[in-house]
Length: 463
Image 1 (cartoon, rainbow, N blue to C red):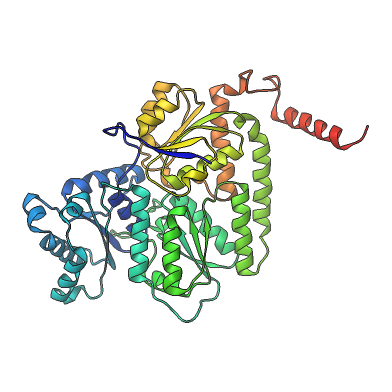
Image 2: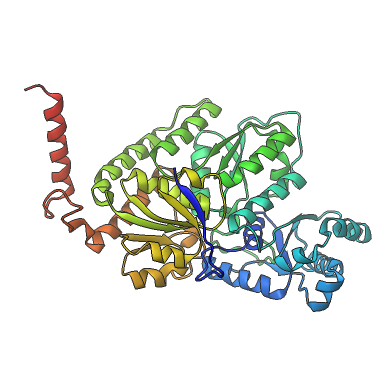
């Protein structure tokens, strides 16, 4: 059990967290033919747009109501109206996702009431869904904005249905999952003969594909028709503690029960996930996943000699921190410094002494004696100053290619993490430190395994 602390500094130095509006906009981007829009100044949207473009290296659809000094004081209904009408005329999306910012939240606008008046005034908007979510950027963080946007879409779009669709399940994906993660989960679920409806599905819209035709809105992702059928699914699988509220709201409105998986990185978590799919589908676990499990076990055996006793510092959103830290603890690492962005019930369960809600300066100060630093790309200078290996994880990741396709879920994703992080320990030379390596440095993994087998045999076979 970890003690959760909050930084009391008067200002943030080298920020770790990102804002709620950006998290909500990111969630909307997992919808097909959608135009996300921030209700605030052009600068709010501009900074978020640059961050996502650098991370995904793709054209990102994101609009703004372009509030200025006068409209901030007098009210922004006209700005919202003009923006929605322009978006409808030029892009004609199926969904316009609006999220507030600190500017308009401080003013205290009744956006829900404004939208009713705008719809009554513009009947041409009838076939376009408009979903609004309150996301003040002076509270919460990226993960909170994502969860609030998903909840708003569930409340506005999902329809309760009296019948259940055979083999259909819902998957509520947390913001810590990459496009590659969701692709992997879809492949696993479909291997059981099940049909997943993923909300939101960034694997369809932000997976780096080149479309046949240009579209000013999102291309790929979850369709409105798919979202409306979520009330007829057999079960909802929620991935990440951030999705608990969304799953509960979906169950309350439609009666679809849910199961929460706080992480899908690691052996035990994936065993439970596959057994759940087997129970729902009525099919045994396919042989290819049994093979993957065996490969993961072998990778864990090969790698744990290099992970054992290593001190690790991690800075990430709560659900990503939980998944990564729990897996590293299972591999034998010591979680020396944990820093996150916002409150979450999962934080107190972390296998560490304490976790701090703070910034990257806090992480750097606590990571001085660590063997590895894990956070997004803004932590690279801290790793250079500390002269320790740096593993990039999370958003933004703008100084490496393929960030959207990082894989950390399932047996294959966990095995990939073991190899990548283990190779960093090997390359750094820490495995040869006399305090962390019980056998001669020249011993190979096969020699080590042989010694372990001999010890086990000696204990099991009577002399």
